[in-house]
Length: 152
Length: 143
Image 1: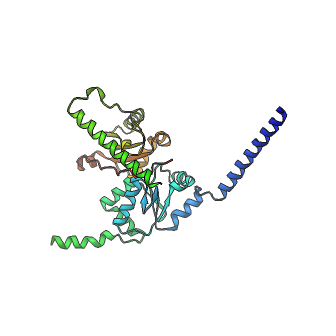
Image 2: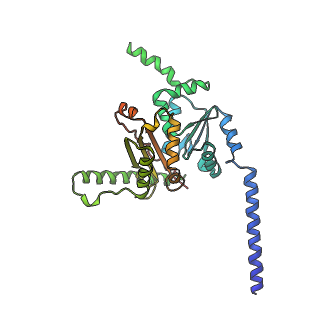
Image 3: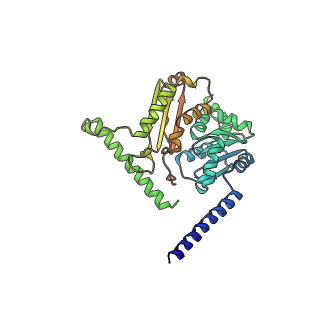
């Protein structure tokens, strides 16, 4: 009886190890957290955001702030990746940019920062310039002449 | 996330904020002297590390966890305001990296969100010492 128990236990152990091995293999095949994969994502589009939730429904105040800032500049067609849906990506992006928090913003493949930095760039006008560098005209530029006219 | 959960979360957060404003107003009336809020262990460590590393002329460590969907008394969401001449001639992203670096252990551990204001004494003076408000929670704390 005890022999049977031992054999079963051993069998289960091997099984467990094997499935862990298979899991490792398959996750490697589609490792969304790998440097190569993320490198591809950030370079694929001019504006790339890693956030919690989606632009239509951000799940975090900081991610929402990033979405709202881009909206003010008329930037709508950026790529957004929801890290809440992919634990590998969530950790991978932190490692990729050596930045511990989400959201993260990339312009033309270059890491810009998180919510605090984007907000500051928005407030001091740097964001308009940075967008221009990647060939995007901020919608705020078109509003400026109107307010100038008002003043005259 | 389930919309119901999210709404409940917002209600709890709002309620907690309400409670907080109640305690604050009571405290300012001077009737709650025994219940002074002590900084938690994580807050203390953050304060200590930032003081040591940046020798700031001004330092705020604000526990904003109550604004989020975490249990009362949590130490998960912080805002830090660091004013130090060590930030002179450093770009903003570098300044944030410096602060993140000093708090690496905390960020890998209990701290879930860290909002950073890193200024030079000159910038701090020019800004009139204004600290921007943090965005409200949207229920995606999860995992």
